[in-house]
Image (cartoon, rainbow, N blue to C red; front, top):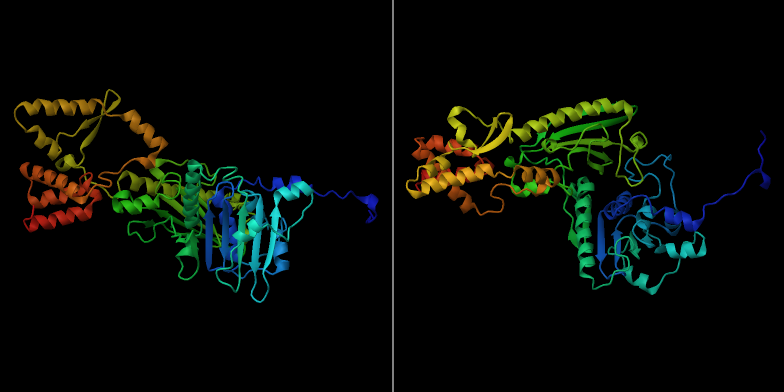
Length: 504
């Protein structure tokens, strides 16, 4: 068929600007993923410093993201503001964090109706452009504005480092504050909570960049963002399982499985922080990185595994290159990934091994606790089964319980009645429901209590063991294994030293 170039050979069908620009808002971003997409551009522009500003003023609130990257000339800025400025099929630099050329626009439009970008490349004058969604809808044309209101200009501060950089300004935050009044305290509190959500997300997504010396520094309202590493690499009790490398054509895929420490092996502060933005259960699974940037944080990648309490210590690192985007179905938001079919069986195998190891650590509380007849009193509670029914009893061989039962007189009957009442009213259903719905909200033993209170309970248990005929050295060694003192090894050691000095 011959090429036809006259007007009768085709219809020129351009998308309606007003409809298309509203459709670009519906990619499914939330605030934290949208801001992360903007920061990707800053990192690709070789920025070493990024400043985020969240300014509350009711419906006139705004957010700005400024970097000291290489900036853009006027021509480059206009092209960057063009919807879909880059084809995903184009060959990109190995360290490029983008793919579709949509991030700046779709991320911004998802949160605001007015996007202004000011940029300065070294040796060039400042360039500024704006997308105003209401104006595009009104005119029906893709009009990228060159002039701006005084209100917008007042929010575009001078560059913090005058030589070069870029400022992204979001106004008319209809998805975040809408038409809220400035004195609406609930809305203000929600705005502040969103800042915390963004901080936790950025600390996780860009932790590798933030961990490197002089690589990247990030501030939110002038407060530095500290990195959150999901694998606790500096904890001695973290288990590094054998890593595996897969050669895929010219690229290499590296997978590193980790089993995190049981909470008895780390401090309460470390345990709370390691829970991550969404809590221990939600953060288990694969962590997919591309060019050091975290794309997926805790997901079993559709491999048929469920997120379960006893597997919550399993976290697996996966490292991709740019060329693997299509195989892994990386989406525009860079928040979802699905592995190619030829890798699924290997990923399942690695996941099963890691989950099994994590379950062993979870069930054995970080170490194998001896439960011989001589040490039956280590646990205050006993699980029993009778006629197929499970029930729980207070362990009357526990030294402190045994000592309490030795009390003579009228208190003896009261103590036995109290023990029976506690055994018959264990809130099993309530505990089960709370554990399944909000497992991370359960308090840990002695959480937040001063050390002297823990030591006092420890002292009473120790004295009870001595009265039961144990030698001091045996009592001290068993104290370390006993719930809940196994979580406070340093306190037990300090307690033992004080015993040696005769202070207790």
